[in-house]
Image 1 (cartoon, rainbow, N blue to C red):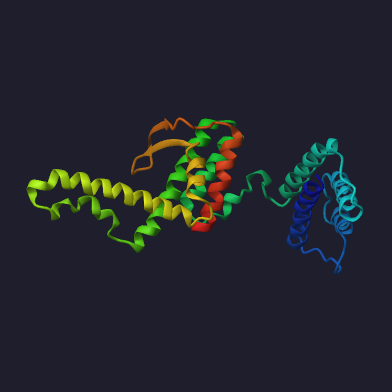
Image 2: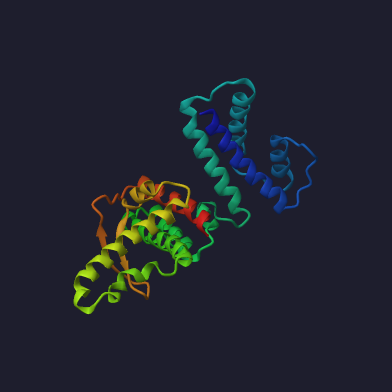
Length: 253
């Protein structure tokens, strides 16, 4: 709880210093958090939900300097107050706090837009549509990761058609062999690609399995959506999947 209070206060302080820079507020060196808050509140149009943030800061000081843990019953109040502070004061600067997302750091536009769409659907409690967007993003991410491996080994996709090197009367058996070999190589490419993203391939694929199998046309139209048998429409699962995709995408691109 003490760490949670510290992180909440850190988020409020980050916005406060953004306001300082945005409004070009002159602050003396090593000025404390409360004095900066008071100055902006007095001279630069006021600070909304100031009492809530001062109470939060007092809880942080009591934890950090005196080892006093905040009460569990106060945590919901601190979370609600901090969110209100961030949302209202960011809006004064023309920034929609609820629209800010770690997905904004994804360099790949396709993946970024899918995750942003998923987050919008999630806020509207349209969980199936949210999971569809997330699943497509996961598929695109995996495809791009495998494409990087294939760029280094240009001939790996041609093995399945290599049955023609055998005599023609052996093509049926040769085709079965080369296609089986291609499947093995495809699996190795997948695991190699995912292992480069910082987690075990088994972990990534287990999380991915909680989405849908979504078939998308070349024009971007969703043709079919299938349950994997492990698909999970819960808000918690979709948020977990989105967080993982964002992390993996920031490593890949």
